[in-house]
Amino acid sequence: MTLVVVMGVTGSGKSTVGKLLAQRMGVPFADADDFHSPESVAKMRAGVPLDDADRLPWLRTIGSWLAEHEGAGAVVTCSALKRVYRDMLRHATPDVTFLHLDGDKDVARQRVAGRAGHFMPESLVDSQYAALEPLQEDERGVVVDFARPVPDIVDEVVSKF
Image (cartoon, rainbow, N blue to C red):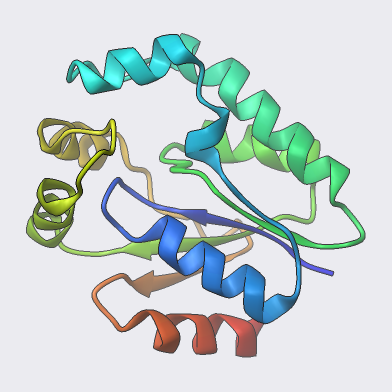
Protein backbone atom coordinates (compact mmCIF):
# COMPACT_ATOMS: atom_id res chain seq x y z
CA MET A 1 0.00 0.00 0.00
CA THR A 2 1.05 3.55 -0.69
CA LEU A 3 2.27 6.06 1.87
CA VAL A 4 1.31 9.55 0.75
CA VAL A 5 2.37 12.94 2.11
CA VAL A 6 -0.01 15.67 0.94
CA MET A 7 2.28 18.70 0.86
CA GLY A 8 2.00 22.39 0.11
CA VAL A 9 1.72 25.83 1.61
CA THR A 10 -0.89 26.82 4.14
CA GLY A 11 -4.29 27.21 2.47
CA SER A 12 -3.54 24.73 -0.32
CA GLY A 13 -6.18 22.29 0.91
CA LYS A 14 -3.91 19.61 2.36
CA SER A 15 -6.34 18.50 5.07
CA THR A 16 -9.40 18.46 2.82
CA VAL A 17 -7.64 16.58 0.03
CA GLY A 18 -5.81 14.29 2.44
CA LYS A 19 -8.97 13.18 4.26
CA LEU A 20 -10.79 12.36 1.02
CA LEU A 21 -7.73 10.63 -0.45
CA ALA A 22 -7.32 8.44 2.64
CA GLN A 23 -11.01 7.60 2.56
CA ARG A 24 -10.82 6.62 -1.12
CA MET A 25 -7.68 4.55 -0.52
CA GLY A 26 -9.12 2.95 2.62
CA VAL A 27 -6.11 3.88 4.76
CA PRO A 28 -5.54 5.89 7.96
CA PHE A 29 -5.22 9.67 7.81
CA ALA A 30 -3.27 12.06 10.02
CA ASP A 31 -3.06 15.84 9.92
CA ALA A 32 0.44 17.15 10.61
CA ASP A 33 -1.06 20.14 12.41
CA ASP A 34 -1.90 17.72 15.22
CA PHE A 35 1.81 16.85 15.63
CA HIS A 36 2.98 20.43 16.32
CA SER A 37 4.16 21.24 19.83
CA PRO A 38 2.15 23.81 21.81
CA GLU A 39 5.16 26.14 21.52
CA SER A 40 5.18 25.92 17.72
CA VAL A 41 1.43 26.52 17.54
CA ALA A 42 1.83 29.60 19.77
CA LYS A 43 4.63 30.88 17.57
CA MET A 44 2.57 30.54 14.39
CA ARG A 45 -0.52 31.99 16.03
CA ALA A 46 1.63 35.05 16.87
CA GLY A 47 2.62 35.34 13.20
CA VAL A 48 6.17 34.05 13.64
CA PRO A 49 7.31 31.51 11.03
CA LEU A 50 8.80 28.28 12.33
CA ASP A 51 12.50 27.70 11.80
CA ASP A 52 14.29 24.43 11.14
CA ALA A 53 14.86 23.83 14.85
CA ASP A 54 11.08 24.06 15.43
CA ARG A 55 10.36 21.72 12.55
CA LEU A 56 12.92 19.00 13.28
CA PRO A 57 11.05 17.18 16.10
CA TRP A 58 7.76 17.66 14.23
CA LEU A 59 9.18 16.05 11.08
CA ARG A 60 10.63 13.18 13.10
CA THR A 61 7.23 12.52 14.63
CA ILE A 62 5.53 12.55 11.23
CA GLY A 63 8.22 10.22 9.86
CA SER A 64 7.64 7.83 12.77
CA TRP A 65 3.90 7.89 12.15
CA LEU A 66 4.48 7.04 8.49
CA ALA A 67 6.89 4.23 9.40
CA GLU A 68 4.26 2.73 11.72
CA HIS A 69 1.92 2.48 8.70
CA GLU A 70 4.43 1.09 6.23
CA GLY A 71 2.94 -1.93 4.50
CA ALA A 72 -0.64 -0.94 5.35
CA GLY A 73 -0.60 2.47 3.65
CA ALA A 74 -1.53 5.88 5.04
CA VAL A 75 -2.02 9.52 4.14
CA VAL A 76 -0.57 12.39 6.17
CA THR A 77 -0.52 16.11 5.53
CA CYS A 78 2.72 18.01 5.96
CA SER A 79 3.81 21.26 4.38
CA ALA A 80 7.16 19.59 3.51
CA LEU A 81 8.20 22.89 1.95
CA LYS A 82 11.92 22.17 1.66
CA ARG A 83 13.74 19.27 0.03
CA VAL A 84 15.61 18.59 3.26
CA TYR A 85 12.27 18.14 5.09
CA ARG A 86 11.10 15.66 2.46
CA ASP A 87 14.45 13.88 2.72
CA MET A 88 13.84 13.43 6.45
CA LEU A 89 10.44 11.86 5.74
CA ARG A 90 12.01 9.64 3.05
CA HIS A 91 14.67 8.58 5.53
CA ALA A 92 11.89 7.24 7.79
CA THR A 93 9.95 5.68 4.90
CA PRO A 94 11.92 5.50 1.63
CA ASP A 95 8.88 4.55 -0.46
CA VAL A 96 6.80 7.62 0.47
CA THR A 97 5.06 9.47 -2.36
CA PHE A 98 4.39 13.21 -2.28
CA LEU A 99 1.26 14.92 -3.55
CA HIS A 100 2.20 18.59 -3.94
CA LEU A 101 -0.84 20.86 -3.94
CA ASP A 102 0.52 23.86 -5.81
CA GLY A 103 -1.18 27.06 -6.85
CA ASP A 104 -1.66 30.78 -6.77
CA LYS A 105 -0.53 32.70 -3.69
CA ASP A 106 -3.59 34.97 -3.73
CA VAL A 107 -5.92 31.96 -3.66
CA ALA A 108 -4.02 30.52 -0.68
CA ARG A 109 -4.12 33.88 1.08
CA GLN A 110 -7.91 34.15 0.56
CA ARG A 111 -8.44 30.65 1.88
CA VAL A 112 -6.35 31.27 4.99
CA ALA A 113 -8.09 34.59 5.64
CA GLY A 114 -11.45 32.81 5.47
CA ARG A 115 -10.57 30.07 7.96
CA ALA A 116 -12.00 30.44 11.42
CA GLY A 117 -10.23 29.03 14.45
CA HIS A 118 -7.01 27.92 12.76
CA PHE A 119 -3.68 28.93 14.29
CA MET A 120 -1.98 29.83 10.99
CA PRO A 121 -2.53 33.51 10.14
CA GLU A 122 -2.74 34.99 6.66
CA SER A 123 0.45 36.94 7.39
CA LEU A 124 2.51 33.72 7.10
CA VAL A 125 1.42 32.85 3.54
CA ASP A 126 4.28 34.83 2.00
CA SER A 127 6.89 33.13 4.19
CA GLN A 128 5.56 29.73 3.15
CA TYR A 129 5.90 30.57 -0.54
CA ALA A 130 9.39 31.98 0.09
CA ALA A 131 10.47 28.70 1.73
CA LEU A 132 8.82 26.41 -0.84
CA GLU A 133 11.15 24.21 -2.87
CA PRO A 134 9.04 22.37 -5.47
CA LEU A 135 9.40 18.64 -5.95
CA GLN A 136 12.44 17.77 -8.01
CA GLU A 137 12.64 15.23 -10.83
CA ASP A 138 14.23 12.60 -8.59
CA GLU A 139 11.45 12.84 -5.98
CA ARG A 140 8.52 10.44 -6.25
CA GLY A 141 5.39 12.52 -6.47
CA VAL A 142 2.68 14.35 -8.33
CA VAL A 143 2.03 18.10 -8.58
CA VAL A 144 -1.61 19.19 -8.82
CA ASP A 145 -3.19 22.66 -8.99
CA PHE A 146 -5.00 23.19 -5.69
CA ALA A 147 -7.65 25.42 -7.32
CA ARG A 148 -9.21 22.36 -8.96
CA PRO A 149 -12.22 20.72 -7.31
CA VAL A 150 -11.12 18.36 -4.54
CA PRO A 151 -12.87 15.27 -5.99
CA ASP A 152 -11.06 15.84 -9.31
CA ILE A 153 -7.71 16.07 -7.53
CA VAL A 154 -8.37 12.87 -5.63
CA ASP A 155 -9.56 11.06 -8.78
CA GLU A 156 -6.35 11.99 -10.57
CA VAL A 157 -4.14 10.97 -7.68
CA VAL A 158 -5.89 7.65 -7.11
CA SER A 159 -5.48 6.80 -10.80
CA LYS A 160 -1.71 7.49 -10.56
CA PHE A 161 -1.05 5.68 -7.28
